[in-house]
Amino acid sequence: MNIASNRRFLLLATKLLVVIVTLYLLYSTIFTAPDTFLSWRNILQNAVASPYNWLFIVTVLLIPLNWGFEARKWQLLGQKLEPISYWRAYRAVMVGLTLGFITPNRLGDYAGRVLELKSKQRLEAIGAIFIGRFCQLVATVIVGSVGLFYFIVSFFWADYPGVSLSLIFLLVAVSAASLLLLYNAQAMVAVVSAIKPIRKFVSYVSIMARYSSAEVSRLLILSLCRYAVFLLQFILLLILYDVKLSALQYVCGVAGTFFIKSIVPSVSLLSDLGARELSAMYLFGLLGQDRLQVLSASLSLWLLNIAVPSVVGLYFVLRLRFFRKGVAA
Image (tube, rainbow, N blue to C red; front, side):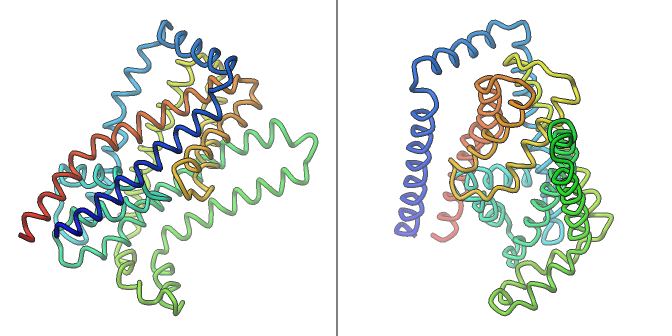
């Protein structure tokens, strides 16, 4: 157990080192130019001195609500395996968040939640976790499609009507297909069963077929609620950093940013950050906004909702490891 624990610790330390180096490279790339750094410092100083600085406090207070919706989703999902209290579900989400922080595409989220279960069939939770994540993706795709529709009509329709119409049809098709898959999880299980190389994993995802349409609808509503909180946080930070737009432009810009970020594969922390920041700067740039102000809001959103809770989750990860070691001993 000591060797296994040391190996896990070494892996965690190595990945954290990669995170630190990656963030340093990101900092070096964006902020080392004197004029850029000074501009960014002025933006932060103006935000602190702004009469809207209370928006930062509101954004922070929304963090537990954001992950609270995710915990409620996991509580409902995990009931197919074992009774789970809301507190246990919240703790599992925090453990998954911390482990997911250091893995591509947040794959560590699966391990974190599985380790928090007591059921002997806890590996079946992989399918339950997938359904929860897919619900969140569907919410992002549906709302994000509306956001991108605004940009297509406003900025590209006049010059590229054919391409714009094709993109609109594509957005509608993707939204419809995602909903169809969500409410036909049995089909996804059947596909896994039919493909020989991955057939051995069918026992881990078969639980997906056990969720009724009513249960999926509840999960989707919770996903939309969590999405709304996340969207509101981004808008509050944009206002704090003096990005001035109409309500419709705020919503469409943020929704479009989340959509683009969600469909870009993430192979590292840098790509996960980069996809959101680049898409945000591009979309809000179309609306005539300064890229550093948008970048500040986007990085603040990531720090508040991902980085800070991941640090808090370390407490539960350490307790979990101690508990497992004690049981084995």
